[in-house]
Image (tube, rainbow, N blue to C red; front, side, top):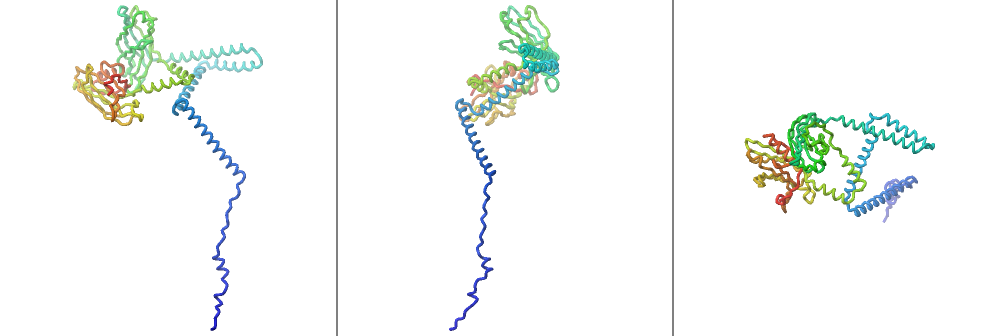
Length: 462
């Protein structure tokens, strides 16, 4: 046999193909070594994180330790801090006002006094009469302060609040003082329209036990009252009393503004004769007592007993309610519209309440009719705007009364009373005034806010 040799099969592989399909080596990318500045920055950042972590840990430890020892929550510290800032600002304001006063009065004397003070300070360094210079400087500063006080007093005198006419007649046999509020004139306008709704509140100091009020006169600066009030005061006690005429501007939906007051020390007048005279109305008292209390508050660092009293006073606030009254004499119809309530006392565990309002028409201590609003869930500021009507003949309107009670609904147990208002001819204060305004304005709804009072009768709490 003849073996045929295939030269192409034994031929070496092509070099180009070998290079094309051969595995390629991938070059390794190596990061450059970190520079010195990069290493330092990284070290600083790590140290910073460690230090911040330690500070935060120390802060948390101190905070928890203080809260544990004092037994006060975190929000209490925030509350105390806010009060401290307010007190400091008040004190700073009073000091600046006391020292500098008004710039337009005594500027020359003040600048001269300070100039002399600093000028003589250079002489003190030189060894001159230290005590004599200081005494002279203090005298000059005191004179400047007196001038500022006089300037402020003159400014107060320029404020005109009108005047009031009254009559006093003391009965020695009966031991009673008859006070007649005759009229007032030139009162300042307290409303946006430039008028006022004035009335006068009378009481005796220092006890303030019995307070009486005149009727409200609408939209006038010269009201004529002609109302007489009787105070029973023994003769051996009357010389220590002071009669107060407090003039207010009535506001239906907010707190009444005090225009001013007149103080009559009864021990300094001749009660043996009838006194009828005019007196200028002085500005209402300022809040010096409140400032003094805050100063004492800060200096004593608020002891635990004050904490307790503070919270108790807050808890005593039961809230406010707004409603309107309307009476139509010809139809014998009394309409009550419960509008809204605000800042009600928290009655539930979650810090809220489920309030509704109960309206009871009463006569001689007996319930005639009772009606209720809808229940507003989980709120301390409910809005109702619900209307209720009662049939009350005109001859009975002076004998009936309304008891409006805000209740907290409880699905499992009994409903609890939050607070109430009692209106009628036998009421007092704002409730009596609201009732009388309704009778004086037939067919017209009269709306007003009232502060809720406590419910003392256990039967009324359910």
